[in-house]
Length: 66
Image (cartoon, rainbow, N blue to C red; front, top):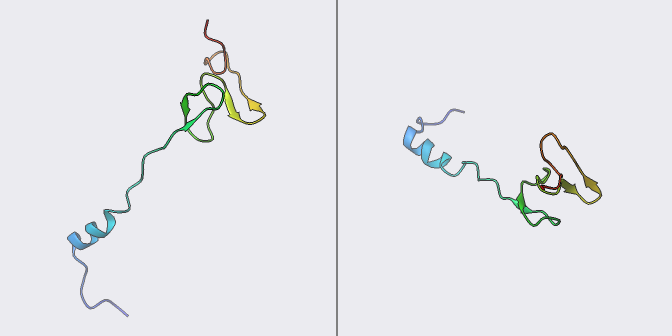
């Protein structure tokens, strides 16, 4: 079955106004206390998850800043 009338542009846009993407909420790194994205490496400490730390000296990740 088809709808009786077309839905207007305004009504469609009002419905879609709630479909926007939310911003990224950072988590706190347990080692350095700095905010980091979830499932990403912390730039200061190299922490990813318990038991996994990454060190990339070329990018300055997980290396002591002296």
